[in-house]
Length: 352
Image 1 (cartoon, one colour):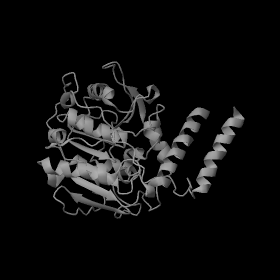
Image 2 (cartoon, one colour):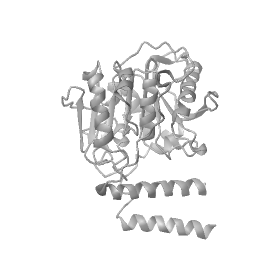
Image 3 (spheres, rainbow, N blue to C red):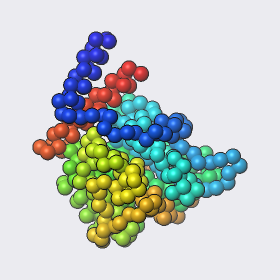
């Protein structure tokens, strides 16, 4: 077994060397480990045959009666293969830092849900009701400190798909949504269900997994065509997916690092290789520290926190569709890196 693992690791390292890939090109924030450790495990009730487990950060202090917003964060495919990975596979833990918590005002709950990937499920329709039940249960358990008018949902790749699905299914629950490289292209009819909801989409033009031109940009255009709040909607486009210091991310699919960094570079300037427009086509210039977090907290809903009716809401009868993987010539290197990352992730999980 050890020899087999050694061969696999050697193969992965050889692929990395062959394609000039370095996992150490970017310095991970020093406190990211401590921040990730501050997320507490939990699990929602069984609904429609499944339960959703999650990790969450709580800003609540002793004898605290403050009402805080709630952010629901949804991982991409492969990043929910093991409990806890829904936090460690991105830099969303930065949103639990003192600096980012201040951008929410007094703080915010960060709720990182996990799909049942050990059962071969990554945010398909069977997870819609269990996720809703988990959120409702979490609200009930923390009702003294959650501002139910400020609940936001966002996520990347398959989690971006689920972001759209949850927002469309239960628009009364969410004040705003922020899908990142969403692996789903909702119909115009479905997007009309969220015409009153501010939406911020982020994607890379060179994304090799979820095609920008075929999938993401058309979804944005459809959204703008039906939105009654187009001026409040945002579309951030990355010419190359990178980290906050400008270092290229492992794949051009990884647009979520811009969101994890609140849309600002490490030196508090404009995020590298990114432009943002609103739903009217007007350029939006972001000024530190007013990024996506400030945008989220500026929106409210009328949701009172009471459990919604059982069922999939506006998704009843909707097809359970995903966007097919896009193999473009100029994205082959990114696809190889995606495969390498998945192999490395699998090996690490197996060894542990």
